[in-house]
Length: 75
Image 1 (cartoon, rainbow, N blue to C red):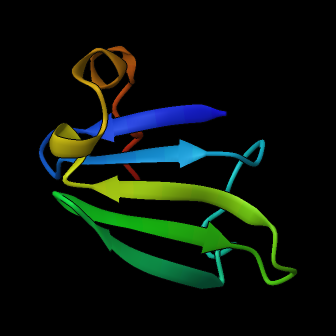
Image 2 (cartoon, helix red, strand yellow; image 1 turned 135 degrees about the vertical axis):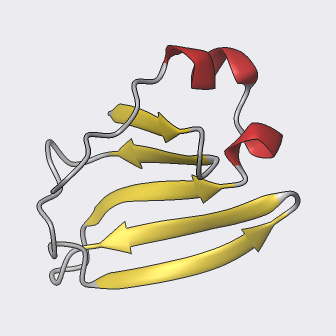
């Protein structure tokens, strides 16, 4: 599992699959949680690819966020 954290968006993404290609997540389940939202990303075949935590500073431990790299920018 790999994690990135975008402090500007306060969003953490946990990748479960080896890599998630743009457009590969064809189905999402959005779940509100105390302090934020968790979004599960699934492939067309139903495989869980990863999940995003919005409001990450309120949900994910600070020491975990501090170790996470920022996501790459796509131009």
